[in-house]
Every structure is written in C-alpha cells, then in structure tokens.
Length: 231
Length: 232
Image (cartoon, rainbow over all chains, first blue to last red; front, side):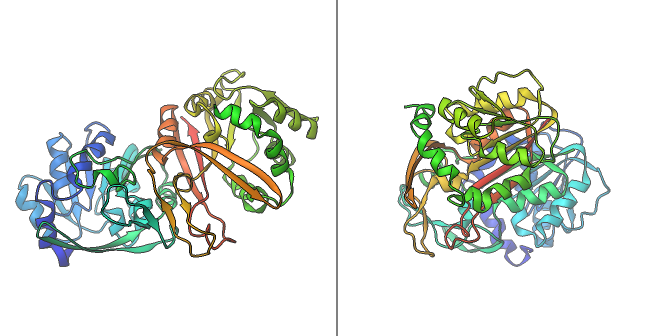
C-alpha cells in the first residue's frame, strides 16, 4: 500500500507539531530502542519525521519508503539524510547490513506483513533488534461510543483475522484518508517467530497527559510497541 | 482477601468443576491447544499452580515427568489422591522450594493471574529453569478480563466500560450445568505480563490467542493468551 495518492495531505498532517498522536507517543517508542549503534534502517519513513528524530538522537539512519513524493519531501527536509526508494517486501540491502530496524506505524501499511518482517530480519545482523510500533490490535477491533472521557469501548465485529481498517480523518482544518490492514496480536507474533525474532519487550503506552484524547487513550491504548531480537 | 484465600475457599467447587469430564474448555479444546505450545518431554517439568492436578496427570500420560506445585493444601491432597505415583508439592510459587536450574520446562496453566505476587513467581520460574529452558504460560486473555459481552446473543457487542490498561481484581461467579464456581483473579494488560517476563530475563518466542471456534461469541474474541518464553 502506498501513500502516494495522499502525500500532500500526509505531509501537512505530520509536520504540524502537536497535531497527531505521534507527538504524544514518540518518547515511549524511543525509550524502547537500544542505544545508537552501527547502522539503523527505518522502513516506511514517509515524509521522514521519525528518521529526523532518530538522527537527532544520534542514530545513523537509512530510511526507505515506497512513495516517491513522500521521499522527496523527506529529502527536502533533511538534505544530508540517506533516503532510499524501495519496497519493504524486497529490501535493497545485503543480509546483516543493520543492527537496528525501525518500523514506526508501517507494518499495517504493507501488503505482505509477514514478508516484510522476514526481510527486516534478513537485513539485521545476529543480535540486532527490530523495533516496531503498530496500531493496537484491541483499538483496531472496536471504537469508543462517544467523545466522552468515560465512553465505553465497543467491539461489534471480530478481533481475529486480517481486516481492512481506516477512513478519512478531519482535524483542525486538515484532512487525511488512511487505509491499512489490521491484525490480531498473534499475526504480528507469528511473523516475528517465523522470521527467527524473539520478543524482548512490549509496551502499550498511554499518551503523554497533554494529548487531547488522554482520558480515553489511557484506558485503551492507541499503539502497541515491541522490540524483538535476532538470535 | 488475598487471591490465595479466595482460592482456598473455592477448592471444593473447583475440584468438582475441573473433574467433570467435558464440563469446561479444558476438555473441549484448551488442553490440546496448550499441549501444542509445549516442547517435547525433556528431563523434568514443573507445573506452577497445578490445582487438583488434571494437567500433570495428562502430561504424565504423554511422557513428561512432572512436579506439580500448589499453595492450597486441599487441592494438593486431591492431586496426590488421584495420582499416588505423582510428585506433588505444597508450596508458594513466589518462593519455590527447589534449587536453581532444576527444571528444563516450567508451566503456569491459568494460574499466574490467580497469584498474589506473579512477578515474584516469574522470577522464581526463571531461577529454577536451566538456561535455554522454556516457560509456557496460559492466561485469561487481557482483552477478555478487561470487558464483557453485553448479552448471550451470538452477535453481542463486547464492551470495555472501565480501563484495559489499569490492573484490577475480578471475581466472576459462574453457574453451568448445576456446578458453581467463582473465578477470582487480577486483570493486567499485555504490557504487565510481558514486563514481568522481560524483568525475569525471558524472551517470548511464541504467542497464541485462543478463541472458541464452536462459539458464535468467543470465535470473535480471545478467551486465553498462550506464551512460550525462553530463559536466556
């Protein structure tokens, strides 16, 4: 799945500080990472905000995306960065090229999620880590009944199986249409197991308190984050 | 009341519930799904929270040499009575009466959420395992213990009214086919369980989410969570 069709909307959405959930969850994700090492790869970098934040934290990052216009936006914002056009299912890198692979909200957006995880494992050196953030499988399965802080979270369909999730989001005059795949936890875990990766850590962070949806999202989290290592 | 006291009060109801063939999910699918998670029989297996002993008895028939441990005296007595050749120990999972590296497999089948100090029990499981040994766990799935179906209708919504992330105690009184049982335990989110395993030096190699394919409701939602962890 490529974001090429909605690239301009996405750049506006992501580059407005405080606009979306990223700003209120990113520190929890960076806490999960191993310290900066030899070479990191970000798969599905989009317009590049995670990659720029990693570089600011002293990681030596190469970033990859499938959408040319997002990659162009990433290069423009970070002329010194290394940005590569490519497919997560066929990473254009030799085996064991990296000691860290980051997939921040991108595993739901690839057509072949297990294939992408296998590729991430291939380009990791032994002992290297894959750190991923995905939309939380529980959150994907249902929705809050209203905007009230104590609104019930309701699941009317099935938690299991691969499902198409998404829609058009409007906020503060910005609009974004996102469609991606949703999976139960077991599907991600199976992909990691099949790729020879062991889960070392898992987090379900509540957002920071300044997030407008804090009351609901400190009850049912937006994201699930994990670190898995290659044996 | 501690969880230990709650379960001591449920010992009779539990043994009737567990020993009526076909009565609960153990007989229908849960035992077989858990057996799929286990490595083949090795040197010595420890079952934490064995209760009246149905799992150690079934594992014994399948070639595992098992030590069953439980903190409730009445349940350990029942386990010994049903399996005089078996090895059953009265003891606390949070202070195991075994040497370091005594076992190559430790099990906790539907017992960690019923313990007062599961973090300590998981540290103890790591201590008594050899390096490379496996810790296989079945839990009430955290999504299950966070909410409930609003009705018994097949299409009933599943609703979380409170918090999934906040740990809390539950006590579910169930009556089925004339048998009664109150399941008392502590809800924790996934992060709670994974955090305890991480803190004890385990890495998780397999995760399974178990529904009930024969149920219109529970084929949509996970009942149980299975984890296989390796001591590194």
